[in-house]
Length: 500
Image 1 (cartoon, rainbow, N blue to C red):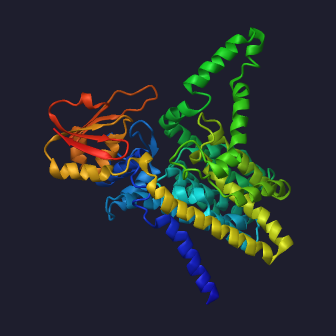
Image 2 (cartoon, rainbow, N blue to C red):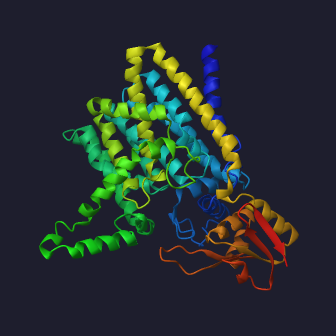
Image 3 (cartoon, rainbow, N blue to C red):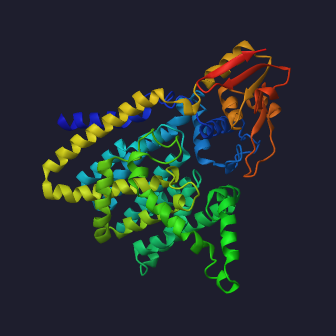
């Protein structure tokens, strides 16, 4: 009976923070969620994305390419589920649950005790970043679970080779690559680690996995070239300001030194190392989080203080016993560290996961020394931590939603009901409101394709919507034409409707 009650308690702990009020917390879809949602709906209805392309591997949306993985899941869901924000976020929430169970299997492949594997699963269940990302339609969250499953099957195959494990490894890696862009970069960096993990001399064991992994990676690089061409704009090596500074530096060098000292990788190495250092900082991990308000609660980091301390201790222990884990930790920092806005939470999700694994490794050593006292103390600290985070999320954060400009769906519904045949202008300083409007207005494919008008691409290739349905998107109220008798604008506190 005690075991059953414990399992019920754990199930509630897993479900409540990830599913409760999922449709209204956050109160509105952000632009990326709306792009996934509406493209998923179009794919489900007519098999086309918003550009009219039939089941593309990459969806262009407003120029910020989305891979096909998450929209495909939504397209399947929308065959029987209603078109609501709740169902848009369900795949991410389920991925968060899947990561918890994958954590247990991952820990066992590292030969951690069953109690430590359960601890890891429990820590993942209550870690702030994994709860937060599970409540938003983040493709990266789904890709993380798929990539962890791929790694877990891979490490399990190293211990006890089986064909089905190799199949799971490659299938999950392919799915991760088709869901978010970071797994491909991580996968390329993982290739030599695969050989190291199996042992170079055991080529008959590692060659099938290595070959399959390599084929998937090379094929993805070729097929997803438009995605990576657009994403290069945010890397240190291609960002306009960074490249300009590099060129000035290189031209200032004597001609004899330009080939060596003027190497781009050498030039950016100090900045990359600073980004790595900042990724380990308490400010980023525990107290403040990153610069983007969509990635964490205000004045909260991504993990707890006690997890941070255990993770640092785990680094020392892993240096002796878990070299493979440290190698993974090293490559997990690359996607974020080479970008201009580092440290970046979304590109660091695998890094966060591995830190929690290190925390579990460290606690296994602590519990060996202190016994049940350590478990009791950890239970108390963890309970207080999850209560504090849950209260902050569903209490304080609920009243701090202005960054999402809440209420837009209600305004669009009201306008559609009151003024179905009138032209409407929407002040849209960001340029993304068209995709939110298409989603919340529930525009049919025929309505959308017959009315959509886009602006010319900007300097980074983004193409914002100018018109869709009865709605016209303008920068200022003065841009409204007389025929547009309804104006919608964000006042800074709420959405307002003005009738002319």
